[in-house]
Image (tube, rainbow, N blue to C red; front, side):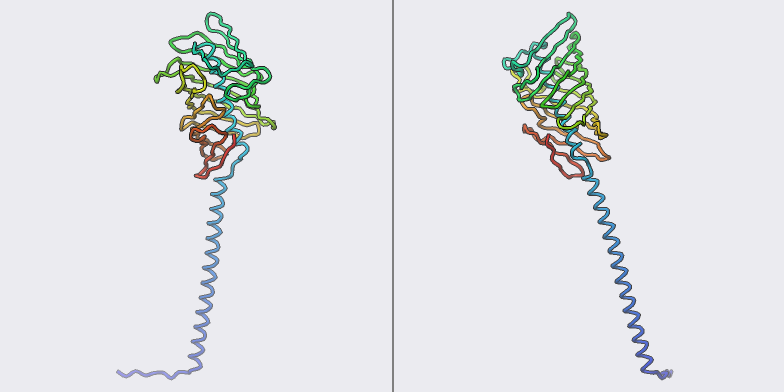
Length: 298
C-alpha cells in the first residue's frame, strides 16, 4: 500500500504550533488562577471554621463565671459554719477546740420537741479558720426521729468574707449514714451579694454533705466534708448556670475555700466543668471548656 503525503506549509504549521502554545498557556493560566481561587476559598472557609470553633471555646463571660464559682464557695462555707454551730450546740459532740471565738455567741432555746439555735456574730467576727463573718444564723429544729432530724435554717443580715448571704433552706440530718458518718441532705435557696457591684446571685439546689473525717475527734481542725448534688445559679444581670457534681467537692473546715472536686456546668450554650484542684487550700479553681483551661480566682 502506498501512502501519499499532502504538501504542507511551514508557516501554517508554525501558526498552529503557536496557537496551540497560546491555548496551552491560557489554559495553564486559567487552571492556576482557578486553583488559587479555590485554595483561597478553602483556606478562608477553614479559617472561618477555626475562628468559629475558637469562639465557641472562649466566648463566655469570665466575670460572671467567676461570680457563679464564688457563689458556690460562699454557700458551702456559710453552710459549714451553720452546721458546725448545730453540732457543737445540739449533737453532744462538744469540741475541746471550738471553731467559734468569743465574738460569736450561741444561744440554745429547747422547747421539749426540738428547739431553736441562734448563732450571733455581731458586726464582725473572725472565726478560728480565718473566715470573717457578721450577722446571725438561725436554726429551727424538730425532734430526733429514727436517727434523723429536720432543721430549717436562715441567714439574717449575714456576711461571709464581705459577701452578703440571705435566704436559707432545710436539712434532713442523719446521725449516721450507711458509712457510719453524719450526713445532711439539704435543699436551699440562697442569695449572695458581692462587694463592689449591684449584681446578686441566687442559688437553688439540693445537696448531700457527708462528714467524712474528724468525726468525734474533739476539734474542728480536722473536719472534712464531701459534697454532692446539683444546683442552678442565676445572676441578676441575666446570666445563668446549672451545675452537677461529678467528683465530690471537698470542704475542709480549716480552709475558707473548697479544696478539690469537679462541678460539670452548662452556661451560655456551652458545657464544661470547674475543677477546684487537688486538695490545696487556695483561692484558685480552673474552668475547662473544650479542653481549654482558664483560671478562676475565688
